[in-house]
Image (cartoon, rainbow, N blue to C red; front, top):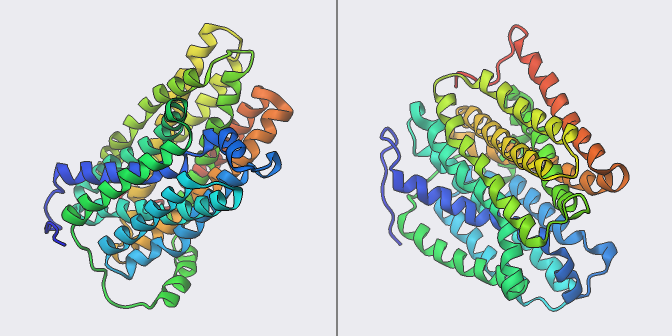
Length: 405
């Protein structure tokens, strides 16, 4: 198995950025394919309505455990091998999901998909490892564009494929894509051997120490946990709002709406360049304010009209723009803290903000059922208000959040 060598002080090649971005998107999309398919999957595998939520929840639990216990291994083991092993498990898990005949089989496959899909989070730091400091934000931002595209495109793609070929097909197609990705990464991804040192248990213990002693990590994790809670709240409930009598959109129409919202990911590479110029503090405030403004826009312009649908689409793009930018700004600050702990920092950061996303998703259905769209948008704004109030504490003397990193 061969790979291309790299020189850390040189610019990362454009083709490597494209490869890492595509790989991150293809892998992370597996976490979201099942979300719009809960109905047909439950009907086919005999999952009761009360247990249907486990289809998504088990995947999220698996991913959270993988972020905490597998991603940090990137500071211990050769990274390319770790990625390829994870992808092999992902492929097998996807095939099990495609062939599942009952609830137990699908639940086990969902959990395994979640755990093994953390290979994407071993890949993302490669952009930082391979880039010189002066262009690290640009590289990370470009790769994160791919990851965010995977998150945003997974749901509408799953809906469209299911409409054409049935729900099994999306998992089978993804398994084939993962096999192809494994072959490409085995050929082109450079090896990265972390410095020798810690054993696994010492590595795990060190994560708590890192969390206690790294204020940049705590602050950035809190910011994006709240931002991602709003993001997940929106994308969990907006299909219900679009399908309601207010708009009466079909599944295909909802999928097209989600496709249009993807425009917002253009913020990721822009945010990376802004961070490289040392403007992270202002950009962070702008990014979170954009997400807060999107919820206010949705709340105050929610009439049942074509104009309201257009405003909702604009708000979705603005929301995705702010979320994408804030994610890249946060990762740029965290990755600058040191290559020897980068995988552990990334695992802690990702686990924290995905927990925020899980909270947003869990509260989304409940708040929509009890308080309608108006209550949903107010809750989304509340998440961002807390984030912005915390952000204002940065301006006290002595607070450092990685802005010049």
